[in-house]
Image (tube, rainbow, N blue to C red):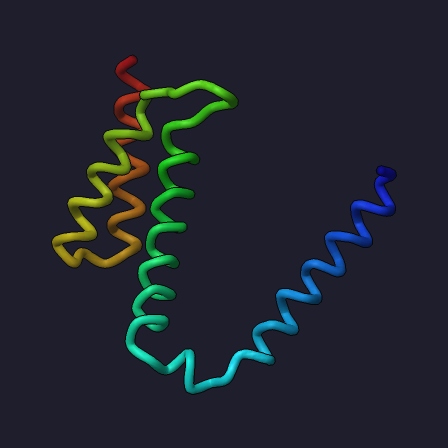
Length: 101
């Protein structure tokens, strides 16, 4: 398969997925179960992205200064601290650990 064929197939797949969103009746999406699944799926995908970006480097698992920074950020976020403070403290934790090691 050439690059152009892959690009055309990917474009068709994206268009079909977009078209599916218009074909699904709105009553189906307002039911409690699909709405709950959509909400939980968003959270799960974001958590997976954070885990991969924090713990992964290439094909290996890396435990460095990012792990305590994420834990500090999660703790502050659970305490309902403003987001900018959470980001600043996480950055300071990571910088402090990198300075020491």
